[in-house]
Amino acid sequence: MKLLVVENDIANAAIIKRFLQGAYDVDVAYDSKSAVDLVDSRPYDGYLLDINLGEETNGIELMAIIKDSPNYTGQPIISVTAYATAQDRHEFLNSGFTHYIPKPVDKYKLIEVISGAIEDYKKEK
Image (cartoon, rainbow, N blue to C red; front, side, top):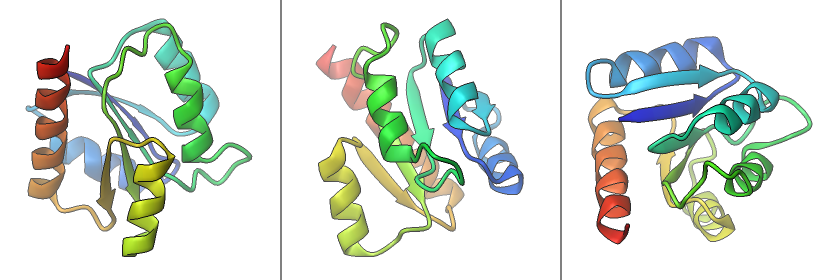
């Protein structure tokens, strides 16, 4: 399974990649432009997007761009964010994310959410 992690914090990206090592093939983009280039160049089985990317484009806007890509066919797009209130979760899920994971990220919860999301997507397909 191929995942794209979009996270502008290098340490957070490394932690997430390490958590997923061995279970998934992970590409990391540190900004939205790199993420769009990767999305346009190959399909992914799922996307993990930070919300606050520290640039003009945030994770919600990037999600919309990904959904417009020809390589996007309904794969899960998971918000991974420090915005961790119930209201934040509700907002992100209502904005179009399929799943939500608050930071700090728990390895086992991360894997559980990703595997469940991909399994659900494959059933629907």
